[in-house]
Image (cartoon, rainbow, N blue to C red):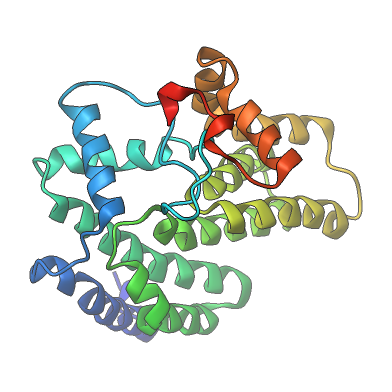
Amino acid sequence: MKRFLKKEYLILLLVTLCGAYFRIQGVLTNSFAFTYDVGRDMLALWSITVVHKLPLIGPILGGNSAGDLPGIFYGPWWYYMLTPFFILSFHDPRGIALLMSIVGILTILVGFYFGKKIGGNYLGLIFASLASVSGVLISLSSQIWNPNIAPLFVLFVLLLLNHIFETGKKGKLLSYFLLGLLLTLIMDLQIVFGILLFPAIFIALIVAGRKKIAIKNFVVFILGSLIILAPRIFFDLRHQFLMTKALIAFVARGHLSPANIPHSWR
């Protein structure tokens, strides 16, 4: 008990409460943003929980009418993660908005833990304080949108990398599995950032480790990645490789036109 009464943890509590205040206001006042994307997500969650139709794909890649890539989709994991909270909130979008606030608060706490791991309590408090009052992170916590939870998962990736590079640590095989899973999940949350992060981390593992990744570590890394990709792989197999053909068309032509997409998917 005395450990948690240390001044560092009291400061952390104050910092977290401050961050929670900024993040939860939209839920308490029912003033959080309800955009087209939110409505689309709520309909998808309704389909899962009421119609009991489990999707194999998520939103169309692009995220808006001007930038959509017909035939190429995000994975369904965003919907899978929201479903339990949608049920617990009795299909009230405020329950999902509260989840976004909780994710933002967890980002503060995980930021502290990461800073503590690499530099002690004071660095942890600096990280937590910055996360608590960051205008960008506060805004991410106030809108229901899949890229907005990516910072929390990036922190988990950094913690896994720290564990992998620490000497004498057990459980590295599990760390590689979780790393593959999280990096692919981040691509499912924000495609551009995720595509850049994935090879950057992979290269860092090789360069910083000063050796090739052991075969067993590479295998479990790929396995973790495949778990996230599995629903879309099944979808592609069931629909005559729709996404594969659309992706090839995009790479070949630099754009997609309605002619590239089957009529039933326009």
